[in-house]
Amino acid sequence: MIAFSSVLYIAEWIVRFVALFVVVRKRRPTAALAWLVIIYFQPWIGISLYLLIGRHRLPWRRTRQYTQLAKRLEYLKSQFDRHPHAIHPELGPQCKAAITLAERLGSMPILDGNSVTLMSNTNEVIHQLTADIDEAKEHVHMLFYIFRNDGTGHRVANALKQAAGRGVKCRLLLDAVGSWSTLRSIGHDLKRAGVEIYDDLPVGFLRRRASRIDLRNHRKIAVIDGITGYTGSQNIVNDNYGHKDLVWYDLTAHLKGPVVQELQTVFLEDWHFRTNQLLDEQDVFPTPVLSGTVPAQILPSGPDDPCE
Image (cartoon, rainbow, N blue to C red; front, top):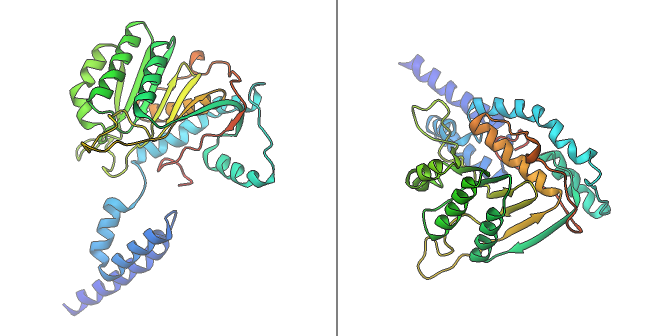
């Protein structure tokens, strides 16, 4: 009994010591301190919780895919350096450090020649989005955390079904938790209409590809024909979601220009992770068109990123 107590005591201090080096890696100081306090006072409970929900990483299969896909997409990203319409602006020393850091973290260079319209009214965003989907000729790519089965969701779903009926390739990627009810209520209807729809980061105890339930894909991205893009905080949901008497105002950037192809790359990475399909058809990356004078840069992040 004495020997067991001694072994347990030593093991607890080993756990505390190792945690000092493991927990602090790629984590905010406040979060690291909270985990260290829990592990210090309750080593076995703390380490069990940490192994369950504390490691901000995805399943090994997706991590391996990230490394493989990064190499396969290098030739696509190199378009931004070679194409004559991919202009890299010089914005002065006051911006250089931030631009360089963003490029190092996201592998996306800053590009000039874009037009950016900021929109904060949900109805205006959905009206413009569905209008662009109605004009789509080649493809519609959408990735959203929340796609609700409500009036707003029906408007977008109907636009997608009509586009698919015209022969447009419609690909829809929805977070498995954020859009759980929609995937089960209208997902089959969208599939029957010709829309390719998948749940991103599926969860489940018995699923080989399952992800931690607390690691979600919160991206909101739409790309139409590789020339028009949307990104921001706007989900596909009514503006009063969660409240009867309040209205949410989310900011969305309506993009045109070379930077849309960077946004397209982010979608293609997530699509590949979920479906194992690498979309590299010519229409996916059409010739960049200069549409304005705004320099812009896409900075993706998440647990897939080795810098996170």
